[in-house]
Image (tube, rainbow, N blue to C red; front, side, top):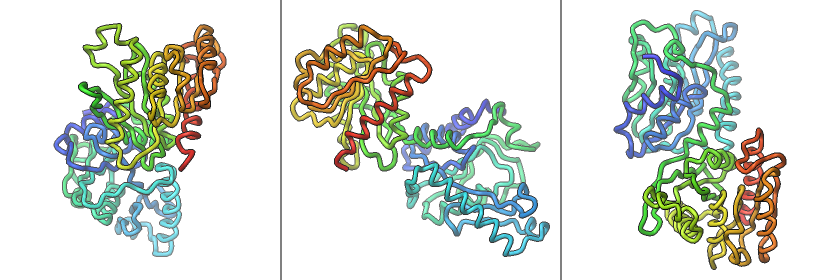
Length: 422
C-alpha cells in the first residue's frame, strides 16, 4: 500500500485502532513526522494529543549512524551495543552526545507545547504513533518513557514497518498495530507519495487541532453539531456565531479560531440551526432566535468545562447581530464581543444595553457595512467599543493578509478582556 501523505496514513491507521474510541486513551506523536499521523488518529478516537519528544543518538563522527535514542524521561534511553562497539564510542563520548541531544530535546518540547507540561498518561492507555519504523530506536525510547510515566497499557502504532527484524521494538509495547509489513523494505518514505519534511510549525499546528473534538450542543429542545477546542491551560473560551448561509465549517471562522487556539484561547464553533430549520430562510435572519441559540450554547459550554472560564463571542454577518442581541440580556456574563463584517445594526435598540467590550471589524472596501457599523457605534451605551477597518478588504476578507489581520485584531481584543482579572 502506498499512502498519499501522512494525513492519509493517519486515517487508515485510525481505522485499525477504532476499538479504542471512548476508552480514555492518550495519543502521543513522535516529532516531527509522526505528529500529523497521530493528529488524525487522535481526532478519530476523540482522544487528547501530545508529543513524545525523542532524539536519536548519532555516533560522534558519523551522526547519521544511530547509537541509540533518548526520550523526555531521562531514564528512557535505548542503546545499540553493536553500533557502540563498531564506532568505538566510549562512555565520555556517549555522555557528550547525549547532553547535546538532551538540550535540543528540551528546547523542542518547550516549543511544541508552548511551555505547557506534558499530558499525564498515568493509568491510561497510551498510543504511540510514528509515520513508520526503520530501526525503531526512537519508538523503543518512547515506549519506555510512557511506562516510566506509569501508563497502564502501551500501544505502538505505525502505518508501515519492515516485515521482519524489529522484534525488539515490538517487544517494548503491549500491542503493535501496523497495517503494512512489506517483506521488501528500504525506507519509510518509499511507502508515501508525499513524504515532505514536517516543520516545527506544522507540529505545533497539529497539537492545537489535536485538542479539538466533535460535540453535540444541547440548546433547549434541539441538538446542534459543534466542534470544541480547549488548549491545555486555556485562559478563556470564544463561542462563534456564524452568518447567514454558513455553518460551523466556515473556513473564515475556522481560520480565526486557529489563531485564537494558538494564543491559548478555547473555541466552540457550532451550528445555530438544525438542517430542518435552515430550510426555512426566515430562521436564518431571525436574530432573536439566533441570539437565544448562542446563549443556550454558552450555558451548555459551562457544564462541559472542568473549571469556569471567561467567555467571549465572535460573530460574523447576522451572527454579529445575534451576539450583540444576546449580550444585551441582563446577566449575560460575556467578557467581550468581536464582530467581523457584521450587521450590528440588526440588534437595534438593544445595543444601548450591551455591557461587554465590543470590537467591530469591517473591510475598507465594504462601504455599506462600514456605514452600518458607524451607525451602530452611535447606539452603544457605556460599554467600551471600537471600530477597526482592514484596509483594502472587501466583505469576506478574501484579499491576501486581510483575514490574518482580522484574526490578530480578534486575538488581541479577547486576550485583553478575557484575561483582565487573571
